[in-house]
Image (cartoon, rainbow, N blue to C red; front, side):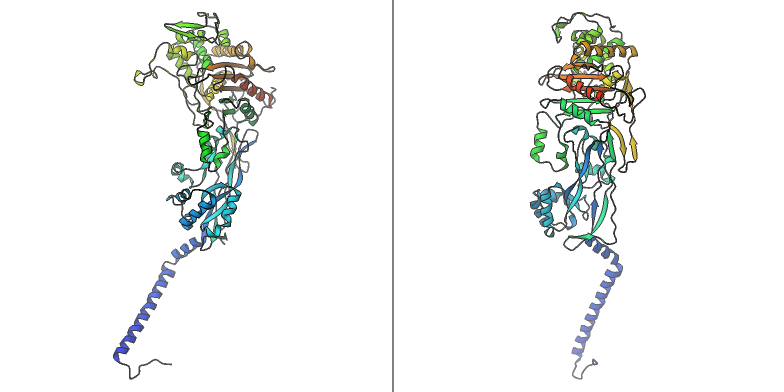
Length: 606
């Protein structure tokens, strides 16, 4: 059939027809151009966009490395847990509100998480970790109404021993914004888990694994259809396993020995290396509480508890050392020839008159005592006089030489350095005025002097081993998930005590006398000789604190311990230390990395 014009067609009609044909032709040409543009020129871009719409990259979280004690007892491990995640690009405000209703979580918190400009809008990010099975099932049931939301099974951290060694182990929790800004280049993303305290924080670089990635196919409603064909998953790599120098058996005995009614701290170390055997701060806390969103009332109960369970007293607790400081004062006096072992000073008649001040002693009177007896009976009057003759400058120099006034260098870090007053410290401009009578207080471990239990443990260890001040360490070794060696610890010397071997011999003999015939007779063991020193620290805020530092066996030390019991009767720390020493000496020795020649052998009998 042909198309033509009849004789009745007018020029007007023909013009309209031509115009119509031209318009249609132009439209077809425009459509062809657009198709060419979309399919040829911009084809790759739109294909990629289409792929993004049907593909969802999902992070496969790596297993965190285990934490174990020296004998392989697991202290921190992983368990399957439910995590609710959401892809920001696919999740609407209505979905967020509904998700908040289903999970019982504030929708504003979820919205802030997924609308954070720093997150990848196409990758699902965790919005609620460690949810209960019931909540996970509830969300799973309503997934058709929650585009962009998914329920994942992820590794959750768990501490099977509960409060045991809680302060030194620390805990993990979601990374906060400040941490994320500082560590984003290390591959951390919003919602990741990171060590917040203790071993979990100090050895994060070993414990953290390498996350994997899988590519899921999704429909137009953001519902997962399964793995995307042709896109194999990138498998995660587990973190390294960390072995500690801790002995869980000794740790448990130490924690149980401190009554629940008391707050206190204890540090036990190998005096020949500085390896930490037990480190206790009581009361403790359950680190499992922090692996999920901790309820506000639970946090308030911990933060406002009068016994401060979140305070790590071993590293952050700073106390006057009381009469345990007489170890340092005596060392300075002997080494500076202020006294000899046989020197008799003014007798103790329940106190000492110094100018207008009467400085009391803890008993009615010791009379005149030579050095060893003055140490055994902890006569304050003897050490008042010794301190006065030493003077502040010499006394503070020896105190610092014994490692006080600075952090010990513990490999877990975040420790206080204490305070050793010296001439620079007493500055009238700072309202710190020196008077000669202050040296009396400092000489017996009172006044402004402050130490940590960890410092006192290392000081005691240095006396025990003959003068070597080690840096304490708790990392024994690191192994890959497959058991390959990654790192091993080595003993590290911080300093050497600047006192003569003869002075140290006299100090060690006096510490044996303290246990055999002095203030620590209740510390005696039937099969091993302890050496130690008691102390009772005055506390302006309440009852006094009880100190005891000790090492054993005296002739070949295998353990050095420092303990403090807060607001406790004099001598309260002695039985705690005795139990710890007894437990360690009764166990089969298991040397750890860093042990040096001269220590016990594996076949040594307790």
